[in-house]
Length: 117
Image (cartoon, rainbow, N blue to C red; front, side, top):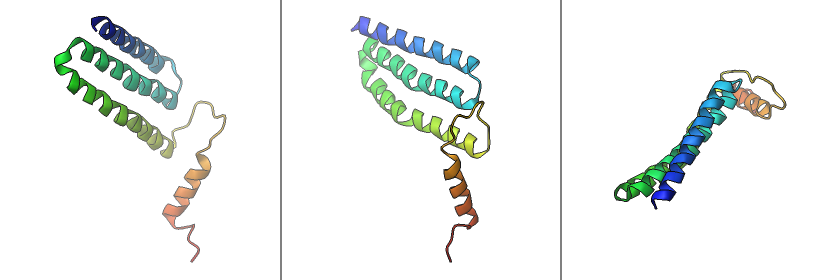
């Protein structure tokens, strides 16, 4: 069990190191959010699972934290990216913007332009 815990800890440390490198090297907020989202989800969950294997007395609490992190961290990353997109923060290089039509529709509905009456 100790070996499994150490392997999980090293996986978490590896993901954290790669994620930090991604935060430094990637060009814009959206790609940096992708890197930090992976670090926060996979890296933290690996660290928590490794700690649960090494400390069986706290494993139930650490497993609950892991489940909570898996449910909330991707949602918070998505919310930050959506807020940045809505505020008009540009992408470094746009290949295809699938949200542009949707954002025009939501902005028009907020202004009341899409009402048929």
